[in-house]
Length: 200
Image 1: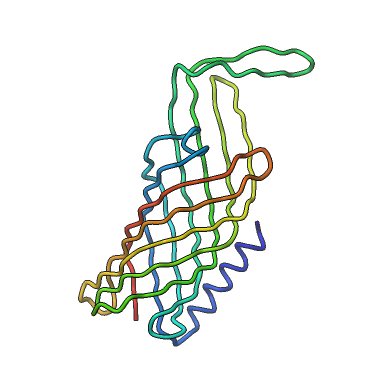
Image 2 (image 1 turned 120 degrees about the horizontal axis):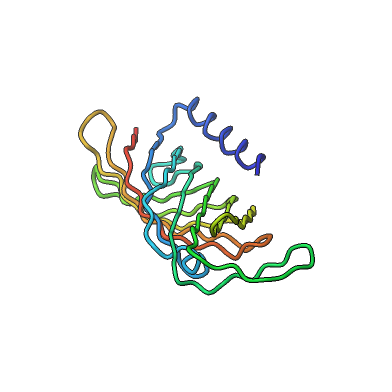
């Protein structure tokens, strides 16, 4: 995972030193799990942040990177007991469960922009790694697992200029899929992003 994040930050650093046309956005991410992720945490979560940096290779295509941190949480009651076994002794534990997910994607991205005046709709794709931490707390017990998986993220969005220099609002809808790895199932989350952006 360290290599992925180092590569992402080096890419972002190179983009800062470039004089090419660029796009930068700091986004607030609202997330909703799908599939096996929704089985663990099914509600909508409002605690997410992502950073996008892109360099245009021509008027319509950019390449860049995205890093983010999404935290998901849900309190669940009336769930069936969990079977545990320790030191040759087995039993069941039940009670209110607190489910947590921390998701850290680091993706290399490419986007295509449609020409519609100052407003710039776009579609994109991100590929890279996703670090996932999963925790389930029941009373004084905590069950923890983590994994590093391959991730893919299609995206649609639009940059809306504010008329102040090259600043604007970034609106995007994304679907992040991470392969199953270690003790964790595959990851699936829809994300709606709203952010403050610059396009020059």
